[in-house]
Image (cartoon, helix red, strand yellow):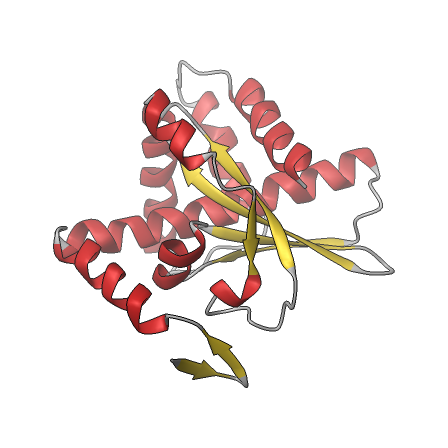
Length: 197
């Protein structure tokens, strides 16, 4: 049993081994790309949500999107934990991100409604279970165009991503000839994130 910061993690070795088995089947370049991809989506989620609370004067004071670890994804099937900060308390939601179109795969991913926080390696200070939702952008071209522009920006800016820049990158795709309606995609994303919260 692995122990961290005073909290015991049941079956840590089991999940670590599951992760190692999964990752052994993939090219490490793919794993690294997936890490960058999830960081890019985390920045975009945070910008979307902050824009929404500013526009609609929600009671939420602040939002932080935390990318989970590899182990968290194996144990709790979640890519992100979102912290909603109100003036009187904080709430949390876990999200599993996918660009899959496969109905069977989506149905399988949707089965888990709650995750228990002892399953998370990085945020063991949360002592209760939190709701888990599937976060879907089912347009691979759009997502990969965004990722390409995101990577280009961080390479040109010494790996620095300023506040609100992810949202600007996403919105600029429409200006430069994207065939997609960025506004409709934004609306869909915000609905998923806030309806699950």
